[in-house]
Length: 477
Image 1 (cartoon, one colour):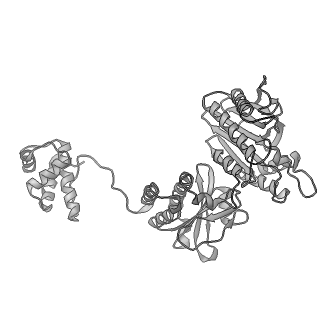
Image 2 (tube, helix red, strand yellow; image 1 turned 180 degrees about the vertical axis):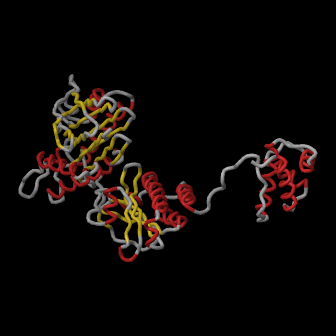
Image 3 (cartoon, one colour; image 1 turned 90 degrees about the horizontal axis):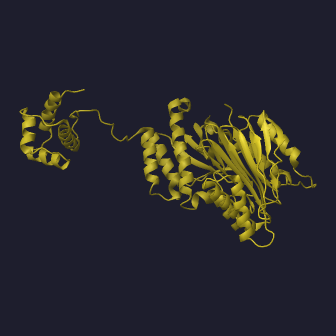
C-alpha cells in the first residue's frame, strides 16, 4: 500500500497537471464533504501539516475528477483500494445494461433489450419462448426478420429446452449456441446466440457468460410478463376462454425446485380448461401439494376451482395443516356455490426431514408412488366425499416416503381420455408411461410434458374433460 508521504507527493504532482488554482481545488474538496479549510489544504500540500486519511482521499477524488475531465492519464492513489469502476464491456456490462433498461421498459421491448445485451457481449442474440402447450418455440419480436416457430420435438433447440442444457450448432453454416432459458427450474424457452466463428462454440467462458445472460432473460420473461400482454400473447396458440384465463392466473409456475425437491405440473386443454387446477409450496423442511377438479365445465367450474385454491392457500399461509385446509375448501364451496356443487381433490404435506406424508383424498383418484423407477403403490387411504358436500369428521392418511421417490397426483381427465374406439387411456397405460419415463431418466418437467401430450394424442388432440398432473420428485441423498 502506498505510504501517506508518497500519496502526498503524487497528489502535488497531479495537482500540477490539473489546471486548478488552490481555491478551486479547495472548493471541489469542500463540495465532496471535506472538513479542512483553505489553510489546512495548503499546509497539507506543502508538507507542513497532514490532513486525516479521509480528507486526503477527498482531495485525491477532487484532483482525479479534474484529471478525468482533462482526459489525463495520471491518477492519485487512495489510502485504501477502491472498487473497480462500472464495466463498459464484457458480461457484467451486458447484464447491467439489460437489468437497468428493463426497469422502465414495457414487456414489448424485452426482445430488443436482450439483443442489445448480446451485442455488448459480442454476440447476436434472439429470444425464443415456449408456448403454454410446450410444443413450439416462438421468437419474441425484436425488430428483425420474423422466423417460423421451432418444434420442441425433433429439433436441436427443442432438445435444449427438454434437457435444460446448452448445445452448439453449425446448421446452415451459421455457428450458434442454443441456451436454455431457465427461471429457477421453470423452463421458459431457449436463447439463440450467434457467434462470429465456429471456434467460439467451444469457448468455455463464452458458454458460461451466455448462460448468465439466458438466466437474466428468463427471469425477465417471468417478471415483465405480468405488466403487459405481448409476452403472454406470443406464448398462446389460441385465445383462452374466460374460465381458462381465471384458472391460469391462479397457478404457480409450472416447475419449481430446491436442492432436494422438484415439482412439475401441467394442465390441458390449455386454452379452455375449466375446473382443474394445482398448487404447491416449497419450504425448508416441508412440501405442500394440491390437485383439484371442480364439477362441471366452463366459468362456473373455474370459479369453484379458483375459490378452492384461495381457501387452501390462505389457510396454509396462516400456518395450518391440510385438515384445516380441507375444511376451508368445504366451507367456501358450501357457502358460496348453490345446490350440490363439489370439488374433488388431493391435499398432501410431506415432512422432508422424516419422510412422513400426510394427505387427504376427497373423491379423487389416488396418487401414485414410484420407487426405484416402478409404481409400487396407490395411496388410496384418506378417502372422504368431495369437498363441499359434507363437513363432518374425516381422517388424514399417512405414508412414509424415501429420498428418490416420486409422487404423482392427477385428475381423472388423464385416465378417462378416450380414443376414437372408446378405449380409455387408463391407469395401466399411465403406470406404464411413468415406468418408461423413469427408466429413461426423464426429469419430472419432461415427464409431465410428454405424458400430457400422450393423453392428448390418445384422444386425437381434443379432450372431453380437463386433464392435469403434478409430479413431485424427492432427490436422493
